[in-house]
Length: 439
Image 1: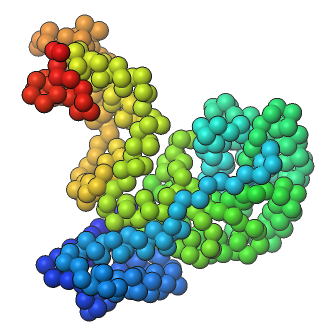
Image 2: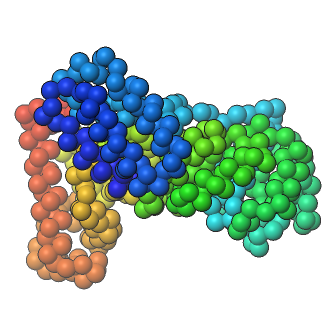
Image 3: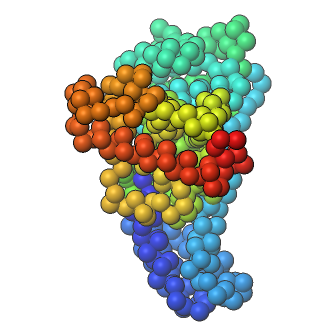
């Protein structure tokens, strides 16, 4: 979402290189550029004004003026201000007496029902025992959608037949107490547009539920419309936090930078994809790093830890040591990588990669092609690819629906990787203190 904003900020900072130090003149010029870039990214004018004023105070300090690396120093100033602007630190979900309710509110189309399932999965991974309550009595098939998601995740769902969402919640609370569940995620009704009927219903539901946490789910791609909607919700409902969905899209991203300032409520979660596991805790400093092209290695490591099986990783390490790495292992690594999310998103978390990837087609279809080619081989061929002669290559190509040239390229790449690992093992030893091959 922030690719265009990132590119413009990186170009702006590069213009500072070659200058001996930051002065009031070039700080003002730089912040004027930042102001224009933020406005073009659809950040609201009041938010931009507040950001620029705070950044100017920080940038014109004596420590900055004495710097001999103005570009790097300005990046730090903008990064720190962005992080503070977005809330400073991640804010955890608030819980009350068990079973503790979490009320989700928002307009139709923002992804509220999907977010309810994502949040339930996230909390279960944290050791909670969640219940989903389908309290949206207006949108057709809302309860069915939530039941389908709950069934896929193995999370119980309660719904009712009547029109009163408060009664449905009471039914869910009794179920949670009976089954020993400790948190209740309530999916409330939405509308295509805000109206008094919706607000009155939500006010009544909140008065009955009395949730310690009421999260407003907003579509991060709707720009300033999201900001205006959030203001109305916050004026009528006691909102405690925000969830921004669809941050993996290609919108300009201004809403994400405006909402925290305009509503005064913290962003607690962001949706980074359509899968039920694509919900991340919002870390302001990490997002600031991504926007400035500094990467987000911490989130990358956390995603890897959540996606990669530790036992499989240890088994792979042993195979590398013993030079038993096969095409089956190669396929397994590809599948593990795919679990971590879109490849472009993963590479974008590495420092400097966002700019390097600009204009480069990160084709995940090639990964699928590699898996198809390997699946078309016999077990013996996957263990000992050197036996794959011309006729076998043609058979594999036909079986996978790929060309012989693609089969050849995969086998050549695999052979080169084996040579590299062999050389690494003999001369340097494997990373992480593993011993060289053959020992």
